[in-house]
Length: 154
Image (cartoon, rainbow, N blue to C red):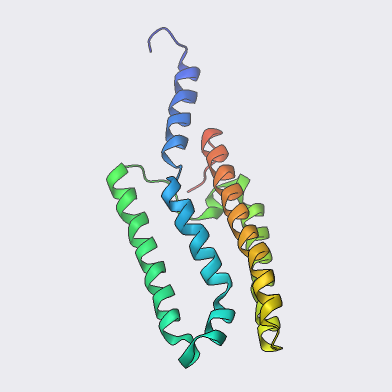
């Protein structure tokens, strides 16, 4: 490393740090499944007996397991980056847009289920889950670019 200029060394360290922020493929597979389950919550609760109470508790359990996994991975890796998306300037707008689109899709699915149009709600579930997944992937890549550019705020 003594042969490379200091600025190049700093840039290389930033790239390595950004690479540590990447999530494994298993996370994306589980996130996709969770996106479908969460976006379809109104559908599942209308189809399951007992208003889907067990399903809601199962979804809560999955969220708690996901949070525990994130904490364990952070401790194991030793890399402590800010958890809030708002700490990454490049990801703020994408995150807000994804949240708005997800909320609108969830409300749309809920409205379709309330009107008894479960088939249309199932058809709308795929694009809503896809928007959730694509938005999350784009947000994570924007977070990585912010780390590489050293634009992360505490």
